[in-house]
Structure formats: C-alpha cells, structure tokens
Image 1 (tube, rainbow, N blue to C red):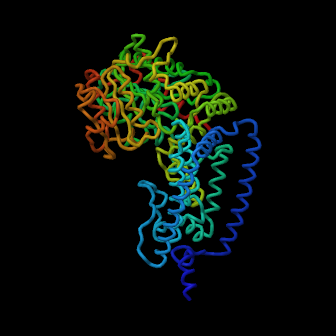
Image 2 (image 1 turned 60 degrees about the vertical axis):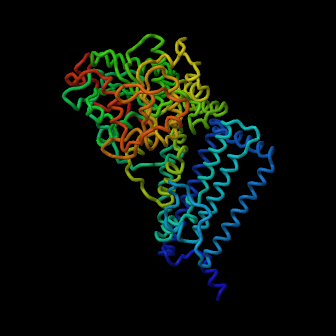
Length: 620
C-alpha cells in the first residue's frame, strides 16, 4: 500500500488536472497524421540539404573553431573542470533531497529559480506539479552550470573568443529547454492530450508552411498577416518628392499651420524599413514630430538586389545623405537641416559628418542619433558574428546569392540576440501548441526583411565592428581622413538601457568622440521600444544628467567623464517618453516659425504618395 502511494506521488497525474486523453481513437489518428507529416518534413529537409552541398559554407558561424578554443582552454586547466563537475553533482544532490522532502509533504524552497523576466516557466504546473518543478529546476541548474563554467574558463582566451563561447553556449542552453518539447512542457502536454493531438497536426502544418515560405530555411511567422503597408501601417500622409537607385525621399504633410524654418531629415537603418518610425497613428514618430511643428523628410532605402551588389558605404553617403540634402534644399529653399540617424543610419551619419567637417560642408546644423554607435569597442552581442572565418563565410553566402545577403539570414542573426523571445516562444506557440500568431505591428515590421549589398555590408562589418576604424581615426572617404573631433555641431545621443544591438555603454562612448556640445540620455526598454515610445503611451522612463554635457535648454555643464557609470551616478530618472526632452532640445535649434510647407510647394515635383514604392519591395 505504501509502495503504491509513493508511486502515485512520483508519477504525473494524467487522469486529473488536464492530463487526460479526450478520445483515444482520435488521438491515435492524429498521431498517424503527425508521423506522415514528419516523414515529409524530414524528406524535404534532406533534399534541400543535398541541393545545398558545395554552395554554402559548412560552418558559417565558425562554431567548430570557437569550441575547439574552448576545449583547448579546458584541457589547460583540468582541475577547474573537475571542480565545476563536483559543484554540479552537489547541486543535483541538493535538488534530489529537496524533491524527496516535498514528495513527503514538507514545505521546501526551490534550489534554483528562473531569472527575472524569464517568461518560459509561467504555467502554474512548473511550480505546482512536483514532476515538472523538478524538470524545471534540473534544467536551470544544468543551463546555469554550463554558462558559469565556460565564463570562468581562461586558458589564454581573448575577450572576443570568450564572448563567442558564452553566446553560443547560451544558444545551446536555450534550445534544450524543457519548454521546447511536448512531453516536458505542461502547457503543451495538456493541449496535446485534451485536443487529441490536433495541436501537433496544426503545428506541423504551420512548420511546413514556414519552411516553404523560407524556401527551405525556417522563416517563423511572428505576426499574423493583418497589415498592409500604406493601408493600416505606414499611413502618415505625405509624398515621394525624390528618387534615385538607393533612396526615395518622403516629405510628410504638415500637421500645424506654422512650422520651424529648418527642416528635419531622418536617415533610418537600411537593415530594416523606415516605417518603424510610422507603424500606427498612435505610435508614429513621424506623425508626432509633424505635430510638434517640424517639416519631416524621411529617407526610404531601396531593398537592394544583385544589380546594387557593389554599392559601397561611400555610395550610401553620396546617393543617400548628400542627394537627400540637395533634394530637401530644392523642396524647401533651406540649405541647412537638422538630421536624425537611427542605428546603422546613425553610423553612416556620424562618418558623413566627419567627412563634411573636413570639407567645410555645414548643411547639417545638428544631429540626433537613435541607438547608433560610432565607437564599436563594446558593441554588444553582434560582435560574436565578426571574425575572419565568419566574414569569409558571409562573403561566400553573398556570392552564392548574387552579391546580396538575403533578408532572412539577417533576420535570423538579430533573432538570435533574443532567442527565447523571438525564436523559441514562437516554436512553442506556432508549432507545439498549433496557434496562429497574433497581429503585432512591431513584429510584422521585424519580419519584413531587407537584403544587404555585398560591398557595403562587408565594409560595415569589417571597418566598424572588426576594426573600429572610425573611432580610432583610421577611416577615410575619398582620401579624406575622418575625424569625429572635428564635428562641432550640437549632438543628441539617445540610448536604451536594455539595447542588445547598440548597448548604451557603446553609444555613450560617442560623448568622447564628437568635438561639439553633446546631450546624452538613456531610455527604458531596448533597441526598438526604447526609441518608439510616444508620450501618450506613458510607458518606460528615461535618465538625464543636466550637470554634464549639453542641457535641453542649450546651456552646457561639465565635460563627460570617460565612464558611463560616473554619468549614471548623478543621473535623474523621469517617467514616460524621452521625446519631449528631445523636442525641447531641438526646437531651439530649428529657427523661427514660418507658414507650413506642403509637399510639391518647392522645386521638386511630387512623384507619388507616401509610403512610396521602395518600402513595398519584398526580400523573399
């Protein structure tokens, strides 16, 4: 009797709490269908892999080289490895002991808990069901142990190699989480039993559709296809007033009777499409800026194909920034503009400003940088993808694709930076639970990928991420040396506390580079939500330090210290959006108010309605 009771406590309850098969016959039929679909999936995968033999690098991420370095370092310090193994064994003994006590009814504290913000273990059974609680804790112990062990390995590894090892170890740990498998995820297991396996049938259908859409590479749908560019997204009213092979220039309709004399010209990243700044009316930066009285121009970069494969970084300066400046002058009669550069658009803007300073070109009167880096010495997790082997593999991939990097490959790279949120959560929802993704404008934009032209992209990765040439004063355009210290115009640096792409520590380094007055702020959230945070939403917060650098009213404080921590020590937290702080800073640099301008009023003819044609070019 006691033996039977113990066994009942040790086994998951499949008769109660949702763990019950509704219709065994239907369950069996669905499992047969899952088997058939799985065979097709495997067959298609093997065919596609066979077709790729010899056309793509065998190890594009240099995983073999990275982990060979790890093994060498571990072999050089065997005692550290033994100590780590002993620690894991001791932790497991503690987990077994606490689990046994809990089975006997004693209250116990967990050995390990998920990190704050880890959404994978929200289902109640991860805490209430003893078996799933044990699975969760044993996984967390192992995952933490793996990451702690590789972080402590020394053996002469340089910092970049250590970061790569830690990054890929975390990717592996995330991939093997029990949440990603049917039998070890209580929510998925309940859904499978209660729906007689229909969730898995639907999920496999979703998986096959995503593979077909990605032409053999998994292209996870993150948002329902509920958006149409120009209809319910990217709808700010305006016109296309200029076009060349690289850009369409959009001028947006005024929202006020009078506007500032100096136009505002925005350079978004060409790694994504411009409408991150114009998602819906309620979160559109473009609409908000127009409502503050700015004449807003935005560059919409083309989605390049193989015809543009050899366009260089300098071409993006000349055909992107310089031709846009010429066009704005024709459209408004104003020679000077205030400029914004977002992400790589900001990096291009910084290099261009150094070039313009050397050429005594003063057409940009002030510059704002949204999550943009000029010094790449602490550029975050994207650095793990930059070494000689990976750059060579990337070049091979581009050559095989006609001189461009396909958008889906770029998307995979960025999704890996937040794998649990942008990959594994959708694997569970779309494929294991068989759900349709919800409509979400930001994730729809995230999936609307763009290609990268080979010459420009390899230059960017090599000269900025690998060599940090701009910050080190070792970059030149057209034999003109680029020195950021010669840039004397007012600069506003926006960063975000949780930005994994342009970390705030990296953005802060620009305070040491520019030669003029600089205002630096840190916003809440990350690379996108930290920027796109309209005041009406009343979300997040931002930090300023008016004792240092340029104040919003234009007055100057003390010089910026070398370390961001010293700036943070005196920083003040403000609730809500940082946009009004930027507006207070920029408005005094924008000249007097004049009657509002409309697209077509100047010397440029209207070529079509916003959002234009380039933004609608799909990468797949």
